[in-house]
Image 1 (cartoon, one colour):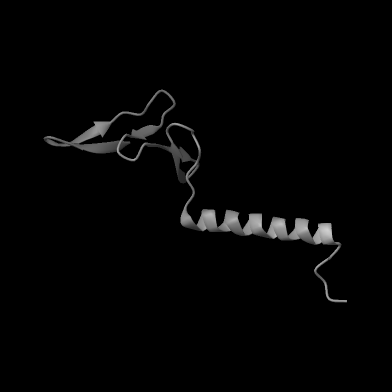
Image 2 (image 1 turned 120 degrees about the vertical axis):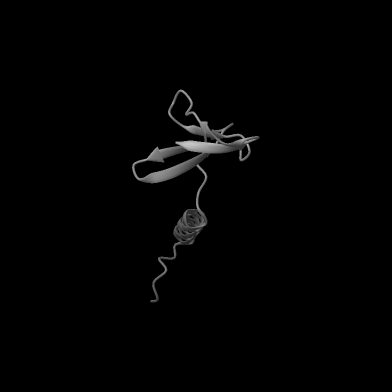
Length: 80
Protein backbone atom coordinates (compact mmCIF):
# COMPACT_ATOMS: atom_id res chain seq x y z
CA UNK A 1 0.00 0.00 0.00
CA UNK A 2 1.10 3.56 -0.54
CA UNK A 3 0.34 7.07 0.58
CA UNK A 4 0.43 10.46 -1.12
CA UNK A 5 0.71 13.78 0.69
CA UNK A 6 -2.53 15.69 0.23
CA UNK A 7 -3.75 19.07 1.43
CA UNK A 8 -4.70 17.67 4.84
CA UNK A 9 -2.03 15.04 5.36
CA UNK A 10 -1.38 11.67 3.84
CA UNK A 11 -4.01 9.98 1.69
CA UNK A 12 -3.95 6.31 0.84
CA UNK A 13 -3.15 5.47 -2.80
CA UNK A 14 -5.26 2.67 -4.23
CA UNK A 15 -3.58 0.17 -6.58
CA UNK A 16 -4.58 0.12 -10.25
CA UNK A 17 -6.41 -2.79 -11.88
CA UNK A 18 -3.13 -4.77 -12.10
CA UNK A 19 -2.34 -4.23 -8.41
CA UNK A 20 0.39 -1.65 -9.04
CA UNK A 21 0.76 1.70 -7.35
CA UNK A 22 1.07 4.66 -9.68
CA UNK A 23 3.35 7.60 -8.91
CA UNK A 24 2.23 10.53 -11.02
CA UNK A 25 5.10 12.67 -9.69
CA UNK A 26 7.75 10.17 -10.85
CA UNK A 27 5.68 8.89 -13.82
CA UNK A 28 6.34 5.29 -12.75
CA UNK A 29 4.44 2.30 -11.46
CA UNK A 30 5.56 0.36 -8.41
CA UNK A 31 4.94 -3.35 -8.04
CA UNK A 32 6.20 -6.28 -6.05
CA UNK A 33 8.03 -9.13 -7.78
CA UNK A 34 8.54 -11.63 -5.00
CA UNK A 35 10.38 -9.67 -2.32
CA UNK A 36 11.64 -7.03 -4.78
CA UNK A 37 10.11 -3.64 -5.48
CA UNK A 38 10.06 -3.01 -9.24
CA UNK A 39 9.67 0.45 -10.76
CA UNK A 40 8.50 0.75 -14.37
CA UNK A 41 8.07 3.71 -16.68
CA UNK A 42 4.34 4.29 -17.00
CA UNK A 43 4.37 4.94 -20.75
CA UNK A 44 6.63 2.08 -21.88
CA UNK A 45 6.41 -0.39 -19.01
CA UNK A 46 10.21 -0.64 -19.11
CA UNK A 47 11.74 -1.70 -15.80
CA UNK A 48 13.99 0.90 -14.21
CA UNK A 49 17.27 -0.56 -13.04
CA UNK A 50 19.21 0.28 -9.92
CA UNK A 51 22.70 1.75 -10.42
CA UNK A 52 24.17 -1.65 -9.63
CA UNK A 53 21.89 -3.43 -12.11
CA UNK A 54 22.62 -0.85 -14.82
CA UNK A 55 26.38 -1.16 -14.24
CA UNK A 56 26.13 -4.95 -14.34
CA UNK A 57 24.16 -4.84 -17.61
CA UNK A 58 26.69 -2.43 -19.14
CA UNK A 59 29.58 -4.69 -18.10
CA UNK A 60 27.88 -7.75 -19.60
CA UNK A 61 27.20 -5.88 -22.84
CA UNK A 62 30.83 -4.71 -23.04
CA UNK A 63 32.14 -8.23 -22.40
CA UNK A 64 29.84 -9.62 -25.09
CA UNK A 65 31.09 -7.00 -27.54
CA UNK A 66 34.72 -7.89 -26.73
CA UNK A 67 33.97 -11.58 -27.35
CA UNK A 68 32.27 -10.73 -30.65
CA UNK A 69 35.21 -8.63 -31.83
CA UNK A 70 37.75 -11.25 -30.77
CA UNK A 71 35.86 -13.90 -32.71
CA UNK A 72 35.77 -11.64 -35.72
CA UNK A 73 39.54 -11.13 -35.49
CA UNK A 74 40.22 -14.78 -34.71
CA UNK A 75 41.66 -13.87 -31.30
CA UNK A 76 40.76 -16.17 -28.41
CA UNK A 77 42.11 -13.74 -25.81
CA UNK A 78 44.67 -16.27 -24.63
CA UNK A 79 48.41 -15.64 -24.79
CA UNK A 80 50.22 -17.98 -27.15
